[in-house]
Structures are given as structure tokens and as C-alpha cells.
Length: 466
Image 1 (tube, rainbow, N blue to C red):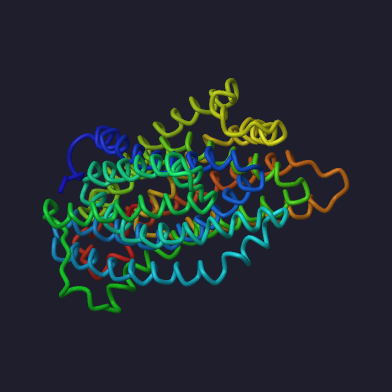
Image 2: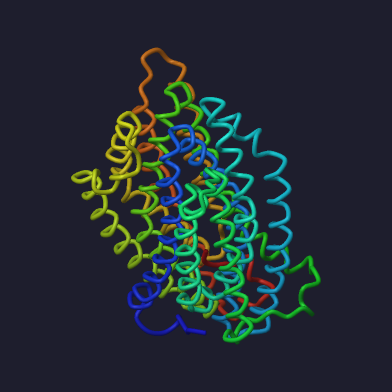
């Protein structure tokens, strides 16, 4: 366990962010590798895998419920030096991870084809996306356990083990992708099914490695079968913090689904180009997201310890670092987009869409970085509801106009990107205002009566990071 309530806040952020970033980038690289090898199967395969990958946003919403809830409550317990409560929350979150994983498998089997029919441009894309989803669902189901274990470690200030496990799992995925997708060395190409299977095998190996780490190395939080019986009060604590944050990812699922819907009339190449551009954009945003995620546990532990000024300091320094990083990547996307998109497709139309998307959407990277930072701080403050409200605002200010514009004569796909910039900027401004208001309420109360931050009060003045 690492105490984040003392020492330089900036040093804590900069020490925690790189391992978090490496872990996230390796996951994103895994998706990009899938797209790279699948691109040889044609536009329908690329569009199908990209659209199917959007379903991951919906599953990630459930993962965030567990991740945010467990990190928040465990970080607060660490700040209060309350190890028994930290262990209880961890084990109750493990129970939820098993239930959510089973729900994901059932929903995937029942709804994959219906989802692809709602967003795909043609039958070939529907088939490719459905096949990929069915083989990818075990990976998504297993990631709930990975999320809880990684979140528990991050809440205690430990980030390297989860990063190393993720990196190794991705190396395995990258090694398996050409073998299973294209049949390298075996002569048995599985196509898009191989992409999903490679991910599922890699995630399974990652889960086994994390389990071994907890059994042999980790001591602050540990598996305790005696605490696996569901306890309504503590499950409610986790869900009270996690559900609004999960709703934020559900909103992202809606946004992406709207984009695929309005691009249907432009064909599979347009959807494939958007899918490639979106993956690359996600990759270059990872450093800023890692900084925001590093700030969350720091804010959470300091909330638990009653150190409100360090919570404010955490936000200011995280926002400044995030903005500087985003400005640098925005300049790269504007000046050399070909460096970021090279090699993903030989189809000219597909790559023209990807170039256009990246050039326009990269203009809102600073605003997106501020959204990341505010989201993590809300989790640290213990109230994730404002995150849901700001995300819902973005959905309504983007989705409804986008659908309306798509019905108008002369509709062009770049209208969708410009509308996204406006909606993202509005969300960033709203998030900053809501965070300032939350500081005024929760930090004043917390500093005035820190002794009230007992376990029973955690869902109100103390919830935390993602």
C-alpha cells in the first residue's frame, strides 16, 4: 500500500500515470492490431469489427460501476487507515464481478445479431460483427474480475502489477492475432472469429496472472471467501458510487451508436474509416486519461484523510498536465495525421474518412482532457452523479441534432464531426462548473467535520476514483 496523503501531489500523479497509461495503451493496441489484420479481409470485416467493438462501451459501463465503486470506497478506507473495510469492499466487488460477467455472456449470446442489425450498413458487416462479438464476449466477461483486482490495487497506490499483466496479455493477443485471423503457421484462418478468440485467450491468461499475484504477493487487500456472501448494505455502497459513473460509459455507447447510424447511408467504407479514426484517437488520448485516472486515487485517499486542500491541488495540477499533453497530440494530429493512420487500410475512401475525422475531432482534445480530469475528481469527491448529468447533456446536444441533420438534403459526414466539437466543449464547460460547485459543498463540509467520514458516510462525503 502507498500513502498518497503526503508528499508532492505532482510527483504522485507523474509516478502513477505512466504505468496506468502503458496498461491502457496496450489494451488499445490490442484493438488496433485486430483491425490491422482484419483489414486484409475487406471493408465489411473492418466495419463489422469496429461497430461490434462499440458494444464494448456498454459492457465498459458495467465495468465502471465496479471499478469506480471499488476504487472509491477502498481509497477512502485507505485514507482513513481502515483496512477491514477495504477488504470487505474488495470481496463484495468480486462477487459483483462474477454476476456481471455471467450477465454479459447471456446478453451477448442473445443480442449480438440484433445490435449489429441496428447499426451495420449491409449484411456482410452484420455477419462479420456478430461473429466477432460472439467470440469476443468471453473476454469482456472475464474483464470484470480484472477490473476489480486492478482497481483495488490502484486505490492502494499500486499500479505496476496490473500494468505488467495487461502488457503481457496484449503481447499474447498480438502474437495470436495473425495466427488465428489469417492462419499464419497453421493454415487454418478463422477470420474475424479469430480476432475475438485471440482477445478472449489473452484476457483469460491475464486473469490467471492477477489471481496468482493476489495469492502470493498482495497483502493489504486479499481474497476472503468468508466475505463472498452478498451483503446488501455494502453492495449498495458500491453501486451508489459506481452506477452514475457507469452511466457515463452508457452515454458513450449511445453516442457511438448514433454515429454509426447516421453514417449508414455513406456505406461500409465510411463506417470503417470512422472505426479506424476513433481507435487512433482513443490511443493518443490515453496519456491524458492516465493522468486523470492517477489523480482519482490521490483525491480519494485525501478525501478519506480529510485533506481538502490537497484534493483541490490534485485537480489543478492534473488539469494543467492533461491540457499540456492534449495540446501536443492535437498539434501532431493536425500536422501529421498520416503518421498516426498509416497502414490500417489500402482502401482510399476508407482512409479519406479516417483523415477527415481525425483532423476535425482532434480540435476538441483539450476539452476532452478536462472532461477526463473532472470525471476522476468527481469520483474522488464521492459524488459521481454530476458526471452522468454532463454526459447526458452531451448525448442530447449531439445525438438529436445529428439525427436531424442526417435527414436533411445535402448532409455531409463532416457535419457530424463539427457537431461533436460543439457538444464536447459544452460538456467540458458544464463539468468545470459542476466541479467548482462540488468543491464548495463537499470540501467545506469535509474539512469542517473530517471525523464524520466514517465508513457509513462514505457514499456521501466520500467516494472516489476510477
